[in-house]
Image 1 (cartoon, protein in one colour):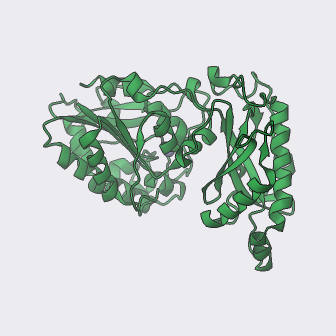
Image 2 (cartoon, helix red, strand yellow):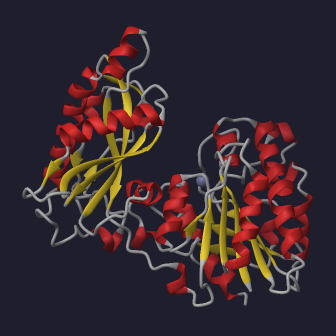
Image 3 (tube, protein in one colour):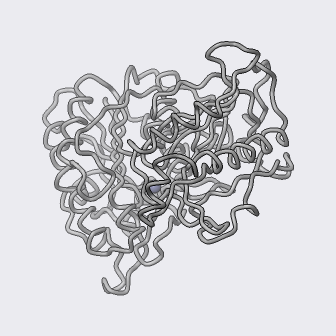
Length: 434
Ligand SMILES: [Zn+2]
């Protein structure tokens, strides 16, 4: 049996008054998901462990069967994998935004919608001025910037300590930045997320920095970046035009290389697997889970994404691999925008343009394929933020003994025969199907 998980990010919702008290999954026209629910078995899943934020990186890691208390390392290490930077054991990788500051305040977390090409110039410039070698060793820098996408970049500190407190810049618009500088955390009372993996890497080249030393190094880099970026021709041009400048780095959400067993190491029936997603964080999780990352042209993370291309890529991957994880971001974005019509469309697109072609293809294969469909969390259109309540899921394969659930939605799945599963239990149940 091959296995495919199709995940609609943020697809689940709460009852909406404008829809007569129905949720979007109840209201949308989605014959494919309903057919699979009718012929398959359903349940609900807790995807966010206690003490963790209902973020996509958290929920997707849990769905793939990992214990967040053991493997969670923040965004930096996941994005490093997505960019193609293979972390060493003594690397501390932290997301590094390029942001806009004005009058001592954070104006935007995105550097005035900085584009990747421009960002590359700025990151190269910062590296030239700020990358520091350790022990004169060539190619071994204490500090290194790596270009990512748009305003989202990476900062790697060899021997850096993750027990620090950083402020996500998107949470602090119009707040004075000086009060948001990095501070050491009072571990173990402070940042205990990460459990056992919390030990700083030993034997680091150049030694391991203390939390206080890491915080002061980051703050020094923030201040130096402001001096340097202000003089860069890109920002001088922006200032002339009266546009927002990309005038400071802002590091947040860092960690060490996650110590994750691959799915192949955990489930002998998986010989090889693939992840298909437009989102860095999900591709990063896939990388550490040992999955191949497949590029799909026109995959955008929005409602205009190439659904058909993703379906084709998934079918192609299933022809050679045993396990495929297809992640579609569009519903989450529509939820954050509070766009009810668009979120309904993203559910219907997922149903007709992605799930339907995959189902129609694999239904006829001699080697059976087990399909699971679920969201990672709720992104309700009225609330517009992630909500970490249990999500509905369905599991289907040819010949499965159906339960009584007739439709795929938050309410119907309550009476599903899987009941309420927690975290890693989903993957355990899914891979039990042989
Ligand atoms: Zn999500």
